[in-house]
Amino acid sequence: LDFFLQYESVFSEALSDAQAVLKRLEECREMDASQKEALVACLTEAGEQSVFKKLLSKVMDARPLDAQPLDAQTLVSLLKLFQDGNPKLRAALLEGEGGSEGALQQTAPQESTEEGEALTARLLGRREQLIQSVTQLSPIVEFLEAAEEEFLTASEKQVVLDCCEGSSQREAMDNLLRKVDEEKTLKAESLVKLLRAVKA
Figure 1 (cartoon, rainbow, N blue to C red):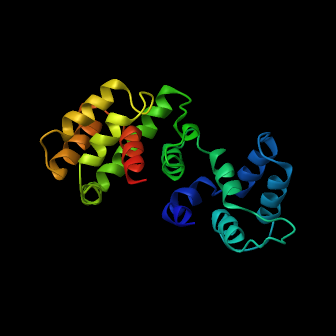
Figure 2 (spheres, rainbow, N blue to C red):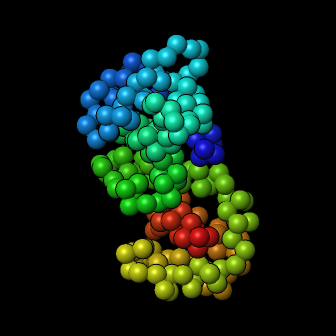
């Protein structure tokens, strides 16, 4: 639930039009009928709250015996219906899914570029937090040396190892962020995926 609160403004904006949300739900074929019913029931309830607030309240107040319980995964599924053409939303969902394969699937080159730029901007905005979160470089190097080839491309792996070699934590993170932002030799989602894997 922290994830929903962290990106509340992004999600609220994406679901700002209740009629558009209902229309998209009607057209959706991937969602279970029970999930759709729970969403529609919540959306049609009277109230002053925004669409997202209303849905989030339903998720937080869900009880096992509710006739139409609404869970967090259903809310994520709904948000995914609106991620095309909305790089901020795509980037937020990508982070929420922990870089899983599904979140990393790209649809069109332009969208993936926009998504990468949005994620890069967020990484740069948290530069100090990222630097402070990496207390040692050895786990990164050890993880990469043992990781399967599919985890990062060979060139990205080499970029990370070069940044870590003979550097302090701050220098290494600065170098990695520069590779993402300026040199474009490392994808933002690859860096996120790596840092998450090392923390896990």
